[in-house]
Image 1 (cartoon, rainbow, N blue to C red):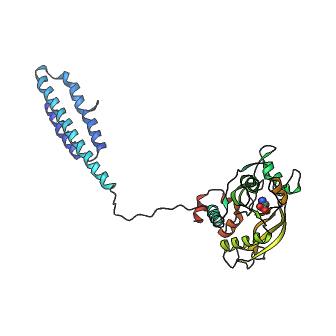
Image 2 (image 1 turned 45 degrees about the horizontal axis):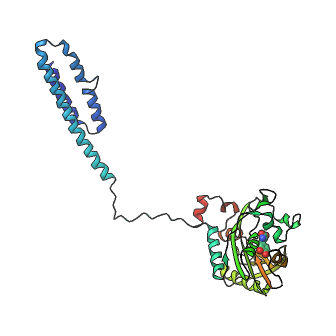
Image 3 (image 1 turned 90 degrees about the horizontal axis):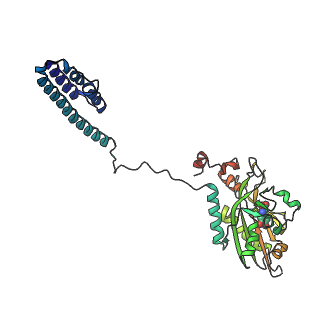
Length: 339
Ligand code: DAH
């Protein structure tokens, strides 16, 4: 028995010494001191030891247990310390190392165009306003000289919420709101999302427009054309060419549609501009006096011009984006290419 205990001590200490990680050390602990461990087994056999030897063997067994426990805890502390040092070495940060470069975000192409257009308008003296995307039928149509059952309503497939409330189909209701907000003379521009029941590769149910309205005394088509020319030069450069076509909008009279040098081909002619070298810049005209009167503005004293460019088409052309939906999907793979 004595010999067995001494052997256990020798082997135990030796095994503890050899171990090099915490998990194996714990296994050694279980082998010797665990419930079914070697030493525990020996202590269980004590009842077979003759009475006169029991004391001696008992105290030897205790001493063996103590020595093994002590060795175990020393080794445990050592291994833990080594592990800590190794971890610290592994996680060391070299604060002098040059950075790997930060991935920078970028503005969405629509936001970039929007900012550019807004800056230009502010420089030209416009007040920027924002009006609701959920509008009354009155502001969206009636006050713009488009009564119920007017055929012009067919040009804008509308998304109604109730009989008299809809998602605005254009930013033009901002004109109506501005005429109630400001006393002439004033110049406002309103950027914003608009909604129509339209859906294919070049039409999205959501798209973006600006509405610009200038009201003053003696405003003429010539003033309008001067401003449009200035805007085209600022946006597309001084070589930009323009042409004007007659058009029809219920809220302007006369109404015109203005084309500018096609930004895809630079005016040479391409599939987008159908070989003409021009693409649509925007529609507008002289504010129909009926609109002024409906808003309580004296149309004998004041006149004005208004125009409403859509911006998605321009952004698609300048960034060579084939499908308008890409602008609204928030797909990072697309957005990364737009940086
Ligand atoms: N609201 C028109 C549309 O969405 C665009 C427009 C045309 C706006 C003429 C105007 C304007 O202010 O005078 O098609």
